[in-house]
Amino acid sequence: MTLGFAPSTTSLGSNSASASRLARMLEPADWAAAGIPLLRSPREVVSGLHSRHRPLPTTAVVAVLDHEERLTASASFVRRPGPADGWEFRNALLAHLRRVVPHDLRRRTPVRTAVLVYCRDGDERWTEEDGAWMWGLRDACTLHGLRCGAYITLTKAGWQVFGEGRGGRRPSSDSVPLALGEPNDELGHLAPRTAGGAAEPLRRAAAR
Image (cartoon, rainbow, N blue to C red; front, side, top):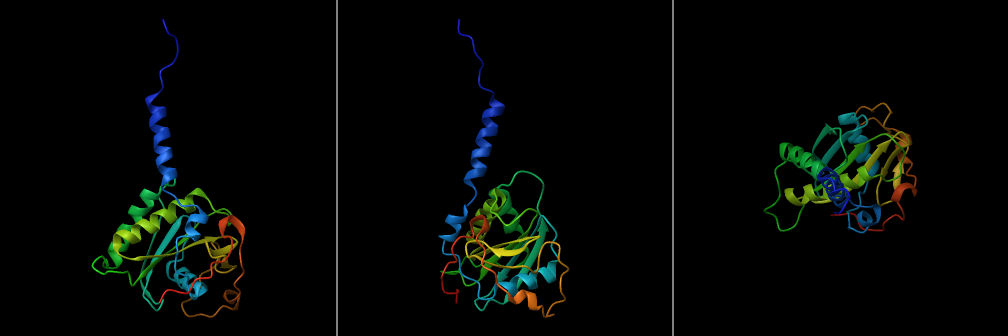
């Protein structure tokens, strides 16, 4: 007679689901090496989207930019509670992209770029949630015929573009949105960031 415990199917299922979630995320080094096009004026993109959508923590703002970095369309939504899963994030981003802009799947190469600003609690360091958003953004862009653009976090410390080392103090997750077109001198100071995977700034030409 052999004594012991049979493995729990619930436990095995839970471990499998956790492993799948971890596979659907990108780490900062992978993101930085992916050739994400460099924004020419990230502070203008961030401040413009902050003014339009007034995001609070757990709000995602996805925007589509044309080849001259002009805003074509944007949408915002609140993240559902639960574990961070790139597949869920991909589906949410894709659903909102389909609502605001036609796909470009018939084009040989993408001419428009999607960027994501995610407002969250915590500090500037990379989290698994950030990794899941990166994976989701990249996959959603592929399925909608768009170029995958910057992933930007908005925290109490300010904003930062992951993989580039660029960021600023304003806007932040708790700052008051400015009216569109209102100047803000603080936005002009770009501070290199090295926390949480925004390692060495990438020296890439801006996408044309």
